[in-house]
Length: 346
Ligand code: EPU
Image (cartoon, rainbow, N blue to C red; front, side, top):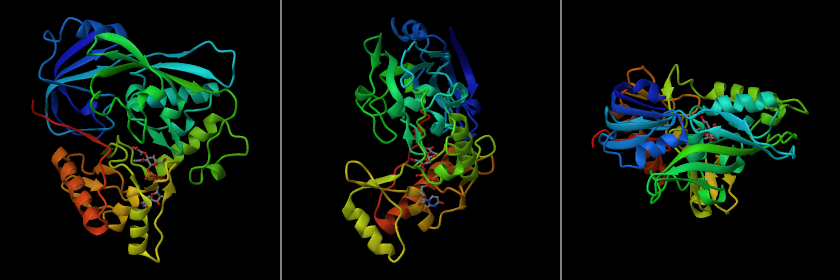
């Protein structure tokens, strides 16, 4: 079913709690709907620019959206037949909420998604941006991505290797393919056998010796709740910035700058070093600071919140700019936003 609504409220379409209007919202509930929308041209329904919102948990609308927002309403979680307990294939519609999938998998005792518990947004968007938390990235679980190709106007599918995954990125987020494919379903490879992933932080000591996926899920949610603001209360998009991935020369330079203090870091498999952007932002004194209605979250400065409920997109974008500038001035490191800005005008 295709639903077309005009002059819709942006509030339910973004977790920043920003007010505004979108000229048109097109929601589809079946993969075939995309063929109906695209196969014979888009003139009948597309007004202005088009963007896809997958729960709005990573988007910053820079004002009213004078165009058409597409949104997946494709639901359904299906366990595909398998004779191997260590390889449970689960297919979810792109419009399923990621945390509903995590709840369902934990309640069935399937391992894989428990560390990704509590992340807002839809499954399709989660797979496109390779969400990650507590030592797990969704890319590790992906078996297959089903998509609609808006150029060839046909259904297609990708393996995880073909998705070109990296830290918070995939081919679907990068030129030249950005915007070409619309995800309709994601198949994850989970396991009914115990595969706890407890290496992140204090997760291992917070759970019992033989935890269930449900227990790990509960602890992950408790850890998230202790650091991250609930977007229903203080609008936010999770981490506003990506962590810094850099080479050893930059890392050594920063270590020398702050010695005898230590620089938190993780070595990546390719030899580069990841430095938490939260550390840079904290060192520059941004924790808790406010700009207009926007503020840097005190307990996790990677997060920018709509502190007053009345923040504007400009408040948030200006705060972003100031933070980037001050980290650059102090450390000569350019931090990058993870949040995608959606511009207003056609
Ligand atoms: N840190 C500080 N000051 C702080 C907080 C953190 O210096 O106030 C430093 C500490 O060294 C800490 C390190 O940052 O050990 C890492 O902090 P944290 O464990 O909170 O994780 P993160 O790297 O800041 C990433 C993800 C989060 C995810 C957490 C947990 C990104 C951009 N963010 O944050 O993902 O929940 O790890 O796995 O990679 C999101 O993407 O929206 C998101 C919330």
